[in-house]
Structures are given as C-alpha cells and as structure tokens.
Length: 223
Ligand SMILES: [Zn+2]
Image (cartoon, rainbow, N blue to C red):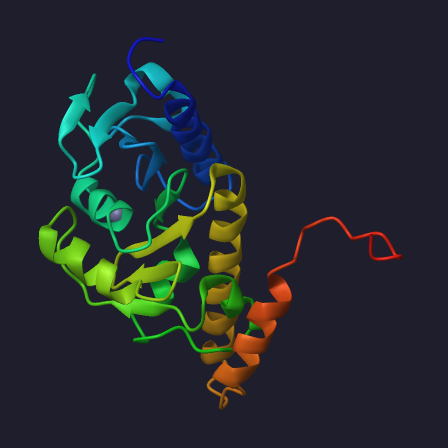
C-alpha cells in the first residue's frame, strides 16, 4: 500500500465493512475517519464497502487539507475534520457516521434521546439531536459539533447518527449500543404510553460504574 498512515486506513475499511455487515448503513451511506498522529484517514465517497481497499482511503490533515487522496473523500469531510479538532480531541480517535434505522427514525421525533436505558451513560448522558442541515455542509458539521458537547454521540436530524470512539476496537460496539438505545426509546415511544425515564443523576452514577466495564477483574487480594 502506498501513502501514509496505513494502519488507520486499514481500520477505516474494516469499520466500513462492519457497519454495513451490522445493518448500520445501507448501500454506500455512512462514513468513517480514524486519526493517526496529525493525520486523518477518511473513507472515500460513494465507494461500495465490499470492494473498498485501504489503498482507496484518503489521508487529510486534521483541518481537512488533502495529503494523499486517491479518490474523492466523503462528502462529510468537514464534519469529520471539525470533530477531530474539537477541544479535547485525542490521537487514535474514530469518528463514525451511520444511517442506522432506529437512530434515524428517532431523530425525526425528539430533540434528545429520552433516558429510557442506562446505556446512555456510554455516551456521557442523553444523546442530543442536531437540527437538520443538508448533508456535506458546514452548517451540518457545526450543528453536530454543538450537539456533541460533553457527549460522545449525537443524532443528526432526519439523517443519521455520529459517534466518537477512543479507538477503532471499541467504535463498532459503541455504534451498536447507540442504535440499541435509540431502538429501545423508539419502541417505548411507539406504545403511546408515558415513558418512565431515568434521572440524569442515575446516568452519572452508572457512568462512573462503567469506567471499569470490560477491563480484567483485579486479583482478590488487591495486588
Ligand atoms: Zn449521512
């Protein structure tokens, strides 16, 4: 493979294929970026995931400036660049954009995902819905960035979802959790019955508990 950040570009392909495999996108919808150092690997526009290779994945500076672009980048490049340059952004982070059905459906009926499940803690609290703006616009990128403050996920009104993950290994599971949380809220809303939602303070407590989630259990003697 020619060009820089080979690991990040291979990760983009793996994540794109996995998103399609899990039904989080249809066709060539959705896009992915992975930061490696001061560079971003960004999925190309309109490329079928089944035949996408790491050689087709472009590389940009963190501000979106092209560095190595074998194909036209995703139309949401501005969104990816803005999220990767937000305050607190870190090396290795993944930004994943899906058109997952429950996330998209829920984005058309609420301004914030109701706290119907404690998994909201995975995303820092109630996931906000960024107001609709046309795909690929700076207005959409800014609206999503605003919705992401103190959160690692946001819905995009009448469009889909965006998720930030600390690394590629966790990104897909987090995307699946987000879709699950949205699906639960959507099903609960569809009953027409009043929702029993959780207190934000409860979500905060769960968040503290989830900090060690998935890590090895320490030895019983505390050593
Ligand atoms: Zn989209």
